[in-house]
Image 1 (spheres, rainbow, N blue to C red):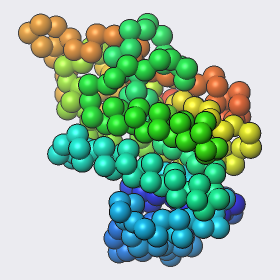
Image 2 (cartoon, helix red, strand yellow):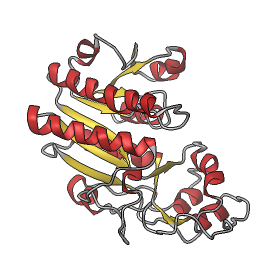
Image 3 (cartoon, rainbow, N blue to C red):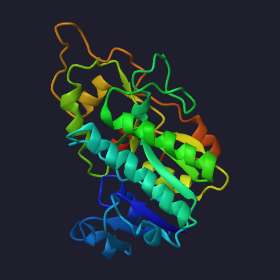
Length: 284
């Protein structure tokens, strides 16, 4: 397959591109900074310098590929909701429309398990759950993008595959260390679904290459959610302390996801079924 990847210098994309090349696929990327993509180019990726925003050549750039895998997003460092919407929603819609114009209908969109935040359920989130408007900017824009892409699927035939990633970690990614300070007052019994970068790579390729799954949404996570308390212990974090009003994030299930659909429909099986497995295999 020839696959177009956005966000190729980001945390997910920078690991996905080498994986796709090793699997024998041809990869074209769109990057804003050529220097940051030198390693990807050396590994065999076709690097196009440009921006997803206000890019009149998107259709031309995408021409001839079999699938688009859209990993580019604004997550941390967003200064406003408007900035997040421009990157996470507006650019996504523009890219999807360009794919349709280029005749490339197979479109994989990386979303987030954070879309399940604040749902009043006492179980892992499932793909068909009715989502509530999120408080945080990031999941709010991801929900809006999902809705827009599904509309293009129903109205114009976009072969969209939505992949909701759990907490991504591993392969020298400091994600866990970065987020632990924000969890210091969270209920230590709260569960967190996790997914290793190598399993993200596997899931995205399965989503891009499996025929007949247009319009489907898939949760991606390992088999064993970890509690916030155990995540702190595993990483040697400081002792967690409740606020004066008690522990925050009292719903222990809202960061967990059900993965039966992706296992059944895409034959996904995590290489690292738990964070402990990744630790024991030296893959953190």
